[in-house]
Image (cartoon, rainbow, N blue to C red; front, side):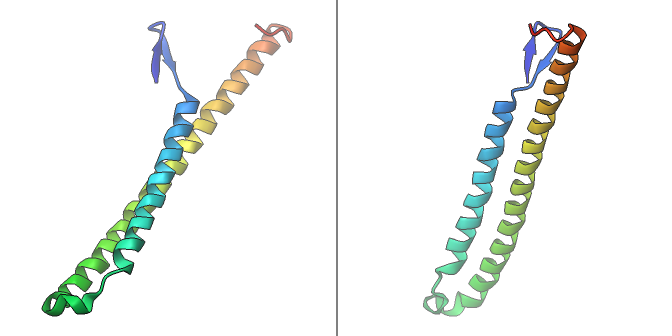
Length: 105
């Protein structure tokens, strides 16, 4: 949000859409990292700590999935917020145009 003439605020819907895209990418990156981390471990080479590693790996994968879902959910909410602001702006412009008798300014 940016101050405008000290009397209100302005929302950059392009900025919100950009942030939503970045959050989506972050969600995908977390998912990819979790798959890569848990999918390529040779626990036989770990000897006596293999059970500890397996427990850590499972918990890390579980926590990563929680983070991935939370970030994906946030991306969707930011995108919805941008759409809501855009819709409100369109309705406001239409109301002003109608009040001016269809003239655009």
